[in-house]
Length: 121
Image 1 (cartoon, rainbow, N blue to C red):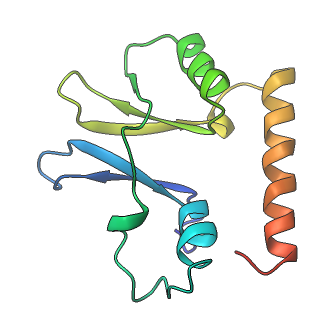
Image 2: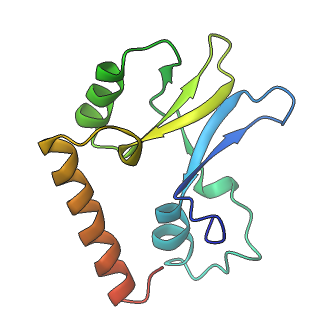
């Protein structure tokens, strides 16, 4: 995640099915695994996967995706097809700027800055 500057990865059953089972985020690694004293290089992700994630479909309108972000207070929404296969992730950084998105991005930046200040990155 660090090497590719990615904050969220989908977790799938296997590469051929791509059936989404959850996601793991940089915050899961930093705030949960590291806070428990786990070495991320030696720890399986299984206990830190967020399951039953909010998703959208590829043919959903952008407004629906934004509503999911807003309603659930999340920064990213996995995109699945009708067979629950992960085909991508839409994040706040992917959508056009609006006042609300700017506030959410600034809030995210402030959280990251605070985590970095305390050595939790």
